[in-house]
Image (cartoon, rainbow, N blue to C red; front, side):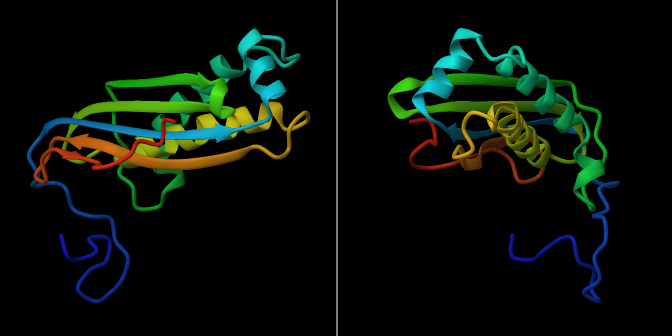
Length: 164
């Protein structure tokens, strides 16, 4: 694809017309991590945070973000999502929590932005809940790993995963 689709022939921003696109199952998988102090990670894993279940709340926030993506990204189509999964994998040896998000729909446009948005908001929620004890946390490597469906077909990121 060599042109930006969100601009018309006059260079004005517009919402892409997806009316003639085929309906297909669309899946996107995104990932990212949040790096933190070992004591912060331990507190999250032990469930000892006074605000409650950090990862459970972050998971709900990410799911909500996927559903509300079109409210945040101006030219993104509102979609009816059929499934959102957010998985957190603590990595104590690397002082991080890895997040992987899978979003599915059956429709005329993909769900890459929904998966990326959900991942970012889930990680931001972890930051928000833990910032009082660790302001130095860093959200890293948020990226699309895979997408399938639609005219462009199946795409998989080549190379290293952000999960370390």
